[in-house]
Amino acid sequence: MGGNRSTPWLADHVIFFSYRWLSWCATAVLLLIQNRLLSDLPLLVVTGMLNILATMYAQRYTRIAQHTLWVLGIDVLYAVGVLMVSGGWSSPFIFYAYSSLVLPGLLFSWRGGIMAGLDFAALTAAALWAIGESPADLVTESGWPSLARMMAGPVLFGGLVPVLIELLRRSLARRGNRRVPIQPQLDRDIAADTPRFSAVGRSPSRARSSLPDDAPLAVQATKIRAAEQGVEDLRRVIFAPLPSTDMDLAPALDLLVLRFGQHTGVSARVTLLGRTRVVSRIHRGLLVRLAQESLLNVQQHAHAGSAVLTVRYDASSVALLIQDDGVGLLDGTHERPGLHALRAMQYRLAEFGGRLDVFETEGGGVTVRVTMPLE
Figure 1: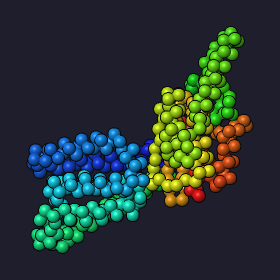
Figure 2: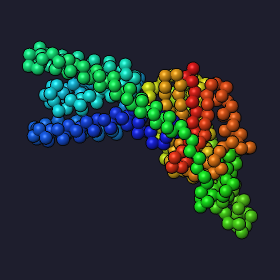
Figure 3: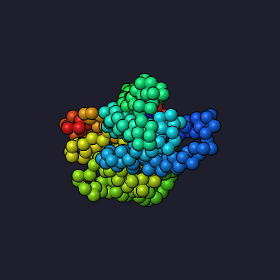
């Protein structure tokens, strides 16, 4: 995804339910224009209620569909059923029915979209034949070009959508990779020498800066010890062993952000982009470790209200981005003495062909990005 903070809206599950809602709204407008709104209102209500369910469970549904292909087949059957009930190829629900072709293309690239389009066209033709409306009738009424358009439309749609989305993602990733230097704000409520991504175990600077200079030394020491204890408690939570050493990357990160959010109150979520691919065990372990170190720093030094972990799969690599909306890098860089944990991770990742970048993003906050080969 690159360093652009806005591209989570291009996640597979977001595109899926967004298209389904947009096509549903367009269908409602078309029915109104054609004076068919009342006659097709029951079907419009049913599809709208199913849209609500699709929106509520879109991310979970997407993850299931990645490993269970028959789920996508059921969605295609549902779309064909909507098309048949509402009038076949001439139905105003045609582009809503095409929503069943969006997710196969996003999950399995253009090949998945084309296969889903072929299934859609074949099932629709078979269903029309079953109710006495054979393709020959369409040829007689409208000619061969009409039949060719109806049969080729789903295939072209299924193949083109993932290609266009991928081009958009790459364009935004290239634009987001530009590092934007941001000068420190003089009015930030943090000392000028506060370290961002400081050495592991150092007490949080926000706890120190909140103490008045004339506070009794015993009170200051007590508060600092309490802050250090809070950091150690968070460390134990974040670095607690996973239920299984063979846990996939996405579920492992889900569990990590769940633990982090419950302990700190900071909003955190995981977003997946691209088709999920197999990541080797050692590479997966390095990515999880980087996420753990980064979230620890988010809590200690970022003053952030939220964090987003984005996993971006390509044909030969996987990228993990940890983005926060905090105060950023106060001196514009993380390269300075004492940053043992981050430097050690950088060297370790390089040993396995990975690359680590840390930079500020537009609008503030910090992005930690690592790119690893799949093998």
